[in-house]
Length: 75
Image (cartoon, rainbow, N blue to C red):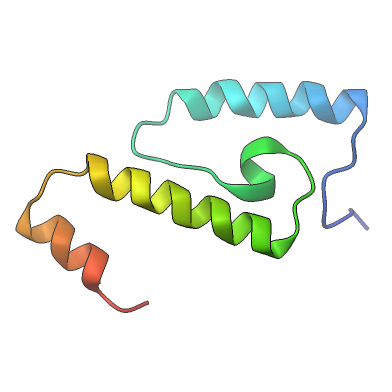
């Protein structure tokens, strides 16, 4: 089967570049971790990226009641 982690090969890099271009056209969608960079990361690195991305998004969001409710809602 397919590997569960990125394999650095030229065909994978080319495919990543296509996905990267598509993702650039998706406002309000944020990618983090292996999906975002097509690189191997340990779980602690991915969690760190996710927390940093959340902090950046939270800072940029308008302070509306709905956004505060969505942020505070338990998972």
